[in-house]
Image: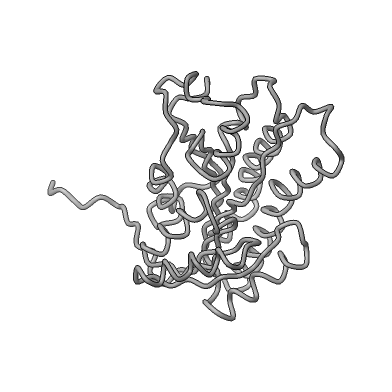
Length: 257
């Protein structure tokens, strides 16, 4: 038997991707990686100036990107986004639900406003946006990929604050599993990535409050955002055609199983 080429491709030519929280951190990295792989990328976040800067950087590197100001806590903006992206870039076939906020407070110390903001950003927004993208894909009989960014914290909480963050990211995992079942018949794959502690703007804030958390990690280090590239491209590309309703933990062994 002659050897055959591996059934693997990260070519996203012809695809349109929406990335939430694309103005900084992991979202910025995700947007650049998708653009470098051929996708036309809709950059969304609240900071218009940062979105414009990221879009210019991607274009300067030969990619295609367009900025869309989005506050994920605003329902009207979420439901309107897909139409706006389609009008400018084409039908969105990839969605990366990356936008999220942490909480660093113990459960009994949280205000109702903070509770609402964490749940609205981390759970409600990705659910609404996933449904909006899926609705258009189903109407157009077009396959798609949805990648939800959870956290290794969904599986491990040590009681030092941020209980609701852990709860919300566990909900993202269950949302991934449930929507994958509902949309499998329409060839829409829904998967999740659960990162550990990675260098990012959000992580900088945590380190300023807590000090060097890497001392408690087996390898004494934070992740580099580039170490998520392969997981992202696998879930967004044709290579994961038979994979839906699952997640991958990318945490360097930082959190006990």
